Image 1 (spheres, one colour):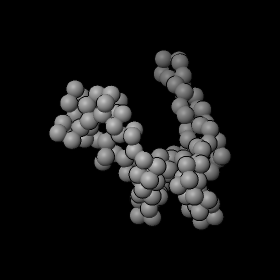
Image 2: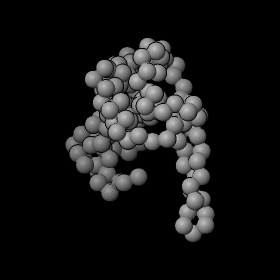
Image 3: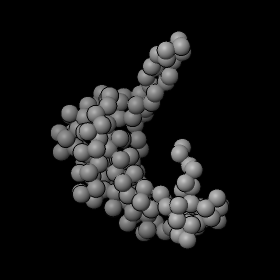
Image 4: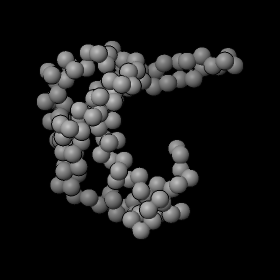
Length: 136
């Protein structure tokens, strides 16, 4: 199925394989865009605005700025060196009106920050290749 911008969209498995054929240098440049200060500031503002519960580390969005002042250099280095490992996700069971439960996974605030920063860089690259009928 053609994407929103078919002339720029890789098609099928070949297209996926072509994007996977990037070099380490290209991957590094992409990650440099992710950790660029302006991108991280935008991601931080978004995480702050979205609020949300703390993850397994119990760090809150209100505590994030102070935590980053101390730990950001090592997190950034881990991201750039492909050593970063996200923390476990905290499980939260939310009761449903019909009596069941819905289990949510709550990432740490730091992982949400990194996810948002990645999203801001990758979304403009990959959005044109998605199908108009794909909402997942």
